[in-house]
Length: 376
Image (tube, rainbow, N blue to C red; front, side, top):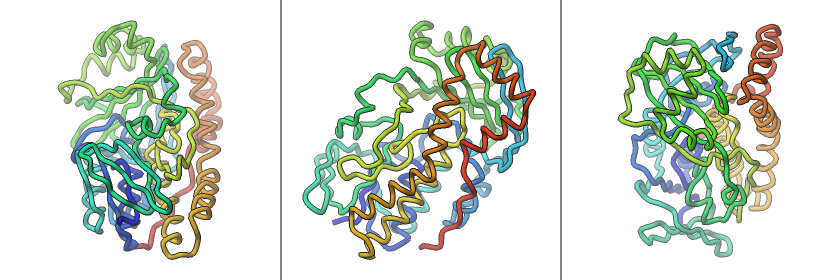
């Protein structure tokens, strides 16, 4: 019997595995891929999580992370602004970041089942039974759902958001191009936006969100980029001069920003599974890391018999709302103003004329510095 079974080995799952195994719990992580591998992700992490990551034994700069301190924003017509980030952040590919966190969690005793899919979860009294695609049945006292934006587990649980079509498609490239190391940019275009920033190894991550309707209209990714993204002159310059480092881009469909239940059939959701902030806010990775810390801080007292399951669920829900509720609402609101070229142009001009407003919006979608961890 495992103490905790974690479905999904992304940031929330890996950080949870590191913290809980470091606290002496028997942890199993089920991940459908095998490390290292690429994910559709903007690959920028706010420095609000840096002290915490270093406290659990992970220093991103030891693995080539790039320090980022400036933010640039452009409209589809090319109007641009730039501002200094209060906290800043770092760029590191998920290919590297996830693998290093996997090795760290493994070092602290976490067990991993890689290349496995979860096809069922059944609650049996005071424990759960998780079924994999290879017909293995793993018993566990708690289950954490860290399966990411959209996965087979969401279908198994018949989560409400999964049955509703989402208009968003995510696409990611790694490029080699001249791009300032300390700058992250958000380039807007019709029905979408694109983030670009440096990661390790002299690479640049270019990741964009676009409507499914536009993908259908152009038929394929190259034509979409040539005809739609390139309407923005800054993106046109980048896309026409870059060396593409992937054989083909990473793509994910049906990305949903709808509110999601934090606890589903007794399963504790973390990271994007619990709630996803609009990518234009640039804070999704930091939120996933912080959410894992919040959840672990509630789970450990449960196994120390200082609280029961109802208390665990109530305290986690309360901590989540206090930490992430406002920024998720702000993120959904801000996203609603982008995509229309005329509206976006107006907002970029307003932010340029009133930099204090733009800094305020950035602060509303980010949190305070996450404190270090003393466990394990």
